[in-house]
Amino acid sequence: MLELIRGLSRIAPQAEFILLTQAASHEELANLDGKNVRRMMVAGQQDLVDGQAFARRLNLNWVYRLFTFVKRRLIQGACKVCREFKYEDGRHVLLKVGVDLLFCPFTAPTFFKQGIPTVCTIYDLQFATYPQFFEPEDLAHRKNVFLNACQKATLLVAISDYSRVSALAYGKLAPNQNHRVANGATYAVCQM
Image (tube, rainbow, N blue to C red):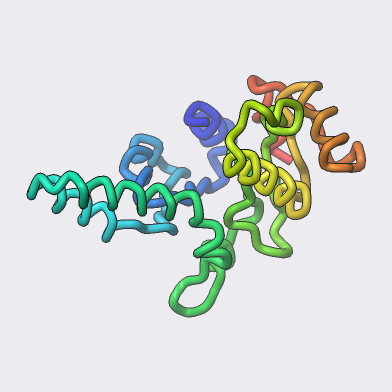
């Protein structure tokens, strides 16, 4: 994904790419900032990060474990808690930024807003083919993410024929809703 962002910024220098981040990954992605790439933290968890550091300094292992558990749960449930991702003025994050297209490289259309074209990438549907290999919570989460992408995405991009055929069958999609684009050629879809 990092190379995709770098490649897109080079081949489309006139476009602006805004990476919507959360506190846990915001600084990690700083090396992507450039003339037409910038990060925007939209799901902050600074209080949890500060709480973890405080617990570590005091060597309170049980408090640290509690913060770690809560942080993980918040990350997993961020879509549920911040479903609309509104700013203080009540505007949705995508409207505030003025985006033309939402690209969801990790399938989940977390920042979806009606009226903004959305492209979601489908990597595989192992959970549907081999459900026995997944914990019930993980299985439910993966199914929910996939079905949510099927409902909200303007276009689904599958990385292989297997993923495409699986998505068509499992998601009961029309063939024109799902296209196969190999990982190396993902740039072509993003230029639509």
